Image (cartoon, rainbow, N blue to C red; front, side, top):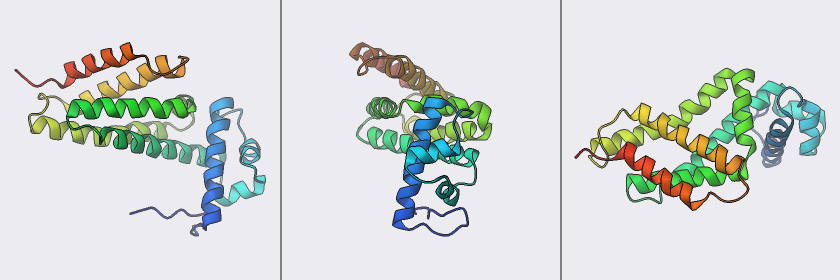
Length: 203
């Protein structure tokens, strides 16, 4: 079921209103990513979106409100990209590798994701926790199912999920955020080896 988007008064948005809200979130991603939360402002976000500052307040009641919604929005989008990617795998290992590839592609297209999530630690700690809780939830469930079926080894799915998420986040930082091109093949080869070590079935 799709959530109905509303304005600050709780009224459902029209198609035009949904488009304006999307422009504000896209602008917020650029402004918070480039300037940081404290140097960003509602006026700068509105200007980047091409709307008046007064229009901003029809959709969000504060700078923190749009920041929090931006974290939720990026979280939804990266999870969707990873789920779509992993669905192309026919084994758990293939699903992992395809999911990682989708994550790296998303972060290449949205390099500000890293900076925004790190800002959340200080600006909105509850949203930082939300981000990782939501990322891990489906991951844990998928690992539990694969372990129960014997496709992968017996493991603590929560620990394994966070270990794999850590691999993706830091490898993405090093070779996507700090790199100057696509993910090197040698990195993906080594990543596959590491994932196999985590998932390998018991002998």
